[in-house]
Every structure is written in structure tokens, then in C-alpha cells.
Image (cartoon, rainbow over all chains, first blue to last red; front, side):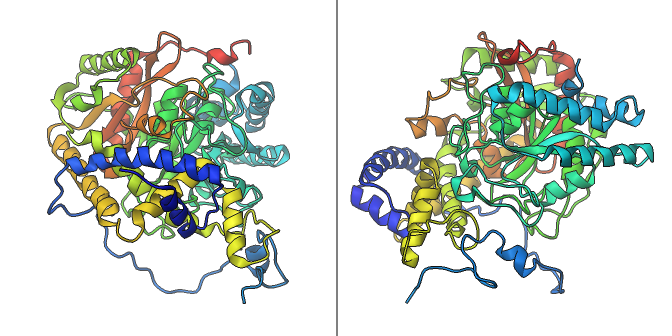
Length: 94
Length: 490
């Protein structure tokens, strides 16, 4: 299998990553090796096998909808890189 | 022996009888850190020394009033993946360089309530992605047994801090072997509990269906003590399991009579280092000598674990790490003038190469048209791997094997080839895919003096069997007390 530079660039865009031209080339080579290794999975016949998403069988975990203390505005904003008095600020969108 | 070299079990007695105070113990650990940390590099963020002394004073009051307890006054380090209220938590990443959590993880809270003194936040591969602890934005820790060697990863700082006696015990996390592998490389005990046994609330997520927190300790008894404090249902983690927590210490003294030890032949495949094989086989003989029955078992899908893991873990990571966008916490590229540019620049500058690689693998595997070929396929193989274990546990109680195919390697040796690094986890990954408990217990040394661990795996929630076998192994082998050679002049 081969993973092209264009494919790496496309996936990087989906993942909101800007990769340098050099990173893209390195990444496509490494990815190619890794994904070729992963093709090993096709040696196993999995037709009819139910996929596992959770190793321990569980059903929906519901809790009662009760009001509890939460973070204060100041605590919630304390780690914000750029904030106003009551909100996180980001560059203009529109 | 120095105070900082003792086990929790021994220290409890000394603290309870007030022959030693928690303040004396904490000061001894602080002096030890001052003496060796420059060479080991286990810590990312040290706790404030005055805060530590205040915690130790509070512990001494508890002991005087007869309210001491399992961890009261015990200096413990925490992997920097665990949120600690008011204490910087970086996850080894530049993107969380300045993050100070406004709350404690459940496990941090439980340890503090038990009276533990938090020594600091220890090194890890960025977002727990790595097997050598070399992917860390804040320096690379060195193996106390040989400073030119890796500590293992991703909980390298946890293992190194316990091995170098900079903490009495530590908490790590294990997604594909990240507790057991560094424990093996640094000659300490490490336990990855059953998925759901310990709350993940406040654990920075890497691969949520695989992540689990566990202890790294000097000996098996300490491991049981730590698990007693850490385990239990937590309404804040809906995947934690509501079932009683036994006193794990009581399982230690049960003998091995009637215990069936399974030796999975696929774990002794080509590529296994001769010293590792010899040490593990010697451990198996010791268990047999102590009354266990040894049976041959097969886990035929073992060779497919790594491939399934890198799809599942990377897919979950690509989703979990989408939250790092520079808006609410952590690093932001403040030069960016548009929103999309800000996201991209923030993430590109904030994440290191291994994290980017896994985000790309995960995004690729989940992208349109590839889902069935990769994610679904890997999740089906996960079922087959779990089936292998189910069959094996019909024939035995505990599986015994190597933790890794080789002992710790030299720093830098595998950095250029990510796949060779991934393959070092071939014997630990299946445990996580099946959600089982697993453990690494020291069982010897390589010819060049590097520690070797023996891996134990058991069925879901069978931690007591693991600890029983581990304790008996420790007793039978009675490895001579050796100090980490890399720090010998101390």
C-alpha cells in the first residue's frame, strides 16, 4: 500500500494540523510502513465477528439529574489563554 | 537502609509507632531528590516543599490521634496525566504547558484523603503515547539502573522516581503497557487493574476504552496497599464498575496450592531476548516449586494485537485530542488572526511528532471510506483477542510471560523507527484490548545488569489472584536487594 503526500495533507487538514513540507514527506513514509503493517489484520477472517467497543460489558449508565456545585466563572476562565471578564475570546469568525 | 528506600508496608509500622514522623520521612525524600534528580530527571513539576511539609505535619497529627491509615504520611509521585488541583498538569505536552487544573482527579483526591504527601508530577511520553518516555516536551528521564538507557514508557517518570527512591510509590496509567513496561525496565512492581476497577475521572484521556490507572511500587505488598486506596466505583466515571473493593492485602498470604499457571506459548516467540527468557522461565519454576500447577496454553491471535491497537488507540486519540484548540486552556498561537488558522497553528506548535503521527493515523482510519477496513476490522480482531483469553482462562487462573521481548534499550536507539518502538509493546497490548488486569513483577537481571520483569495476567477483576501469585513469586525468588547501579555513588 502507498500513502501519498496528498493523502497526508488531506488528513492533516481534517485533523486541523499544519504540517511542514518536510513533515509531510517523513510522515507519509512512516505512515506507509505503519499502515502496511496494519494490513496484517486482513490475515484474520472476521466475517460475522461482533466488534468490541468496550471490554467490560456495560449498559447505559444513568444518574439522577440533580443540581450540584460546579466551577465558578473565575475558575472556568482561569486557564483561558485570552479572556474577557466573562468569556473566552477568539479571533473574529465572520 | 535509608528512610526513602523503605516500603509503604515498613513505613506504616514506623509511622504508627511514631518512631519516624511523616515530616522526617518527607524531608528524607526531599534530600534524596536534591541528590539524584539532576541525573534521573523523573519530575516535570515538583510540588511546593512547604505544601509537602504541611501535608506531612497533618499526617503526623492523624497518626498521633490514632487516625493514620494506609497511605498517611507516605510521599507519592503522580504521573503528569492525572489532574491535581492547583498543581500544573502538562501531560508531557507543550500544549498543556501552563495548565493548572481547577479540580482533582478522583485518584488524586483519594490519595490525598488517605494522607499521602504528593511529591510532584512525574515525566511521561506526551499524552501517554510512547514506550521510552523520550516523547516528552520537558526532558527525558534516565533509567536509574543505567543512565544511558530508557526508563520505558509512557509512565517512565513514575517507574524512575520509585526506582531512584525519589518517591515511595507512584501512580501511572496503562493504555497498551505503559505501567508494566517501565516497571519492568526500572525493576519495580507495576499493576494495571481491570478496565473500570479504578476511576478515570480527571485522567487526561488518550484512548478511553483502553486507559486505566494503576500503582508502581517497591514491592507487591505496597501494590496491594495502593490498589486498596485507588480502586472503586465513581459516579463521575460512567465506565467505572460498581462492585465491592476487597482488602487486597488479604489475598497476598493465600498460598499457591490449586493455582493453575498458564504459560502462553506465543509469548515466547522468536525475537525474545535470551536473558529475558531465562529469568522468566526461572520465575515459572519458582512458582511451580511453591505449589502452583503449570499448564501450557495458547493465545493464537497475540501477533495481531499491535496492529489492532494502533488503529483503535489512534482513532480514539484523534477524537479525544480534538479538544486542544487553544480556546479554553493551554497553549494558543496568539499571532493567528483567524479562527481556523488559530486552531491549526496552536495544534501544530503545541503537539510533538508522535502525537501528530497518531492523530494522523487515527484520522486516516476514521476518514470517509476507510472505517470498515480499519476501525471495524480492528474492533473485530479485538473480540478475537478477548476470545483467546476467555478460552485460556478456562484452563488456568493466571498467565505468566515476559513483559517485553527485551530489557531497556539505549536512549535514542528506536527514535527514528516508530514501528520498531510500537512492536516493543507486543506482549502488553492484548491485556488492554481485553480489559484485563496485568502486572509486572521483578524476576531478575540481564547480563548487563538491567532489570527484567515477569508479566502476570488474569481474568476480569481477578486482581487478588495476580497479587497472590506476585507475592509468592517475590518471596520464592527473594532477589537480593540491589541499588540502582546508575546512582551507585549515592
